[in-house]
Length: 227
Ligand code: AP5
Image (cartoon, rainbow, N blue to C red):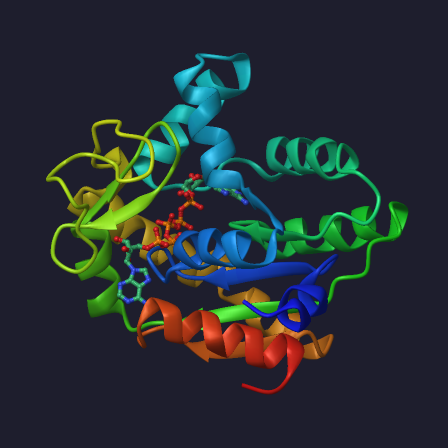
């Protein structure tokens, strides 16, 4: 990574949009490592709450396991707290938020209140058949949230996280019924955000079927220009 690359992205506020399995978490981790941006994943935050058996975790667990969206008011409150806790000048990637038009409107209001501009919304486009293949074979680390795939992104040692050594698991919402539900929910409730951000001239769509490093290069190109 060149100095110029990291300076270009420092302090940016980016939304990653895309269907379940489009590669939002994978790209966010990659961009965090490369650019030092905070990775704020609503899914990771909620799964940590479930593991901790907190009030929020108990309230949201059922929605998540069924592949339904958690109610807007819970998510909006959670994200307002999270964004307010960031130091001035912190750059971040929002992964999994917003997911409904109500959440997008709330995010606009939040960002205006804390005086953070939204630099871009990156939409990763991947066909359904590939999404299903990716989600069915995904394995995740419950400790550090690293993401793998049984065919295309295998850990060095079977079933063990390369990064922290924990045993990998399959998410409950990566079972066939929940995957089908999540894809329907995405189309009904999240896809309208494509038009929402297009109208606000924030949206950039990237082909998410190219390899992981190539998608990262594309994201860099659209945000910073050049190769
Ligand atoms: P969340 O955790 O956000 O799930 P999601 O949006 O369904 O997204 P995923 O994590 O499944 O996919 P991803 O796009 O991050 O793909 P990944 O990088 O892992 O949310 C879970 C649940 O929490 C929701 O269902 C809901 O209940 C609740 N929730 C969260 N936010 C909410 C909100 N705002 N409002 C209401 N409810 C909310 O990649 C997938 C696989 O593909 C991996 O195996 C990876 O190795 C592979 N892969 C990635 N990129 C590539 C590539 N370029 N080429 C080949 N393989 C690739």
